[in-house]
Image 1: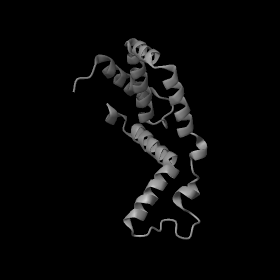
Image 2: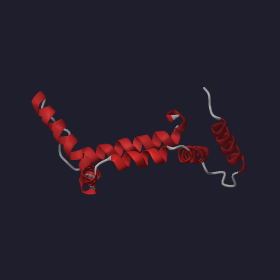
Image 3: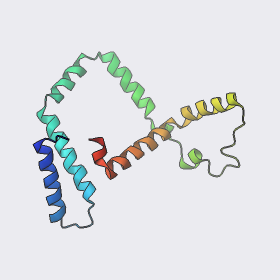
Image 4: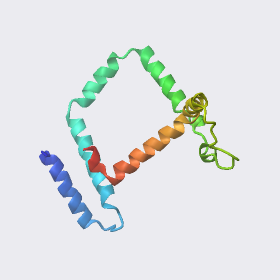
Length: 140
């Protein structure tokens, strides 16, 4: 694997920071993620990426931007995030009872996806964050 010199220097800095760190309880992975994030930010700011993104965004019609903003505000509205008790069915007599009829199962799955979609998104994001923090090298 070919790593750039800057990336290898960032890893060297990471190791030095871990050795010189006064807070011995600070996890090494946190320092690695911090250094890796700063490395990526530095590469991004030195590239022409911000200019390219600005150019692309300037070409998107205002109506499309407004429509996307309206859709994202609706999609990520926190009132659609269901409670822990409701999501896991705690306190219900038979929360996961499903008739063994395929059409009923299909209808129930479709309803649950619509009703709990933000909970599913939150779980997926949480799993991604945990995976990223515990194994940041996986995304490289």
